[in-house]
Image (tube, rainbow, N blue to C red; front, side, top):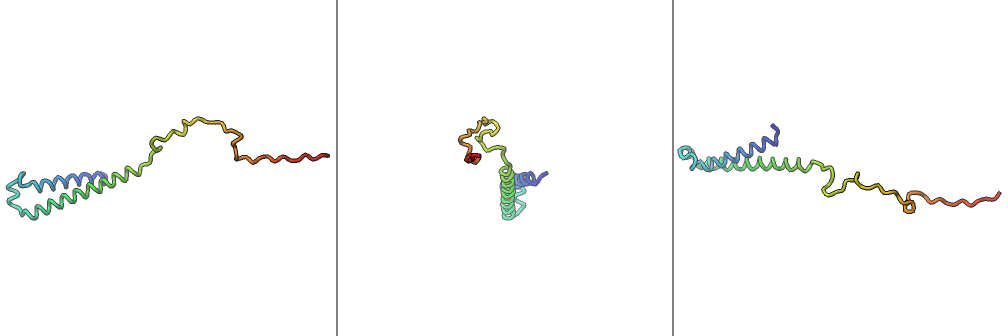
Length: 107
């Protein structure tokens, strides 16, 4: 199990546990009568905080992994291999140096 999956599972588990602790009066009335309500409420708050923290860490890792993936092309960008090949126009080719005419010498 990877760390990301473990964070997701632990976050869901803590949220379920925290909500069960807060609803113990309706779910298990005899259990709620035996235990100290202050400690149980504090445990429920901590369970919800830890659940939220684990889910936030899972989401942060998921978003970072998703953003670090590189796309082949940006959206709506043309395929460069599909562009038509155009013959260069010699009049607009400025990479060549102009040929200087040599004066002819008479012999």
